[in-house]
Structures are given as C-alpha cells and as structure tokens.
Length: 130
Image 1 (tube, rainbow, N blue to C red):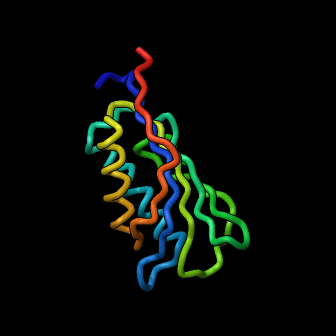
Image 2: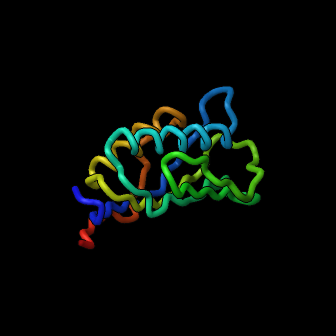
C-alpha cells in the first residue's frame, strides 16, 4: 500500500472501564496502544484520529492523535463515574488496508475497555489519492 492510500474508520461503541480503572485512564491507554498497534501494522502517516468519550451527562472528553509517536491531546471532561460510556471515533491513516485498521482498533479497545457487539460502524472506506 502506498503513502497516498488512505483508510478511514469511523465508529461508535458502548464501552465500560476495566475494573478498578477510571474512564480517562482507559482512554489514554487505548490511544497509546492504538498508536503502537498502527505503527507495528505498517501505518506510515496519520491524517487524524479524533473522537470523544461521552458519559451522556456533563462534558465529553475529546481527544486527538496526530502522530504515532506523540501523546494524545485530551480536552473537556472531567467525566463522571459511570458504568457505560459512548466512544465515538474517526481515524484517517495511510499505509494500511481498512480491515487492518479495524483489527488494530478492536484489539486496542479490548485491551483497555470492556465492550460488546454494540459497535456501530459509521463509515468505512479506503481511498487512493495517488
């Protein structure tokens, strides 16, 4: 896959923090794991990875990841303690097929949150701009 090939994955999933962890720590761990997983899978460039973790009340916690080596930027919150949150996320990356992007997302999510089959795919596309 060439650098000009973009994979897009947009999703919304119901997630719960792991026992004994708060939602923000789970999100930070997920984003770090996601970036490392993308890099290991051969991702060459991040267009953007953005989203929000929402408890349905209070302010959502917004996040942005613009590279595979930096720390995610978090804004908003604080999140109230809840059992279930909604994770909405959009990833645009170069150098991976969409299926691999999706696999890395699910693997990273599983490592840091409890989640079920309630994921709603909002859009999955692959584009070649070369």
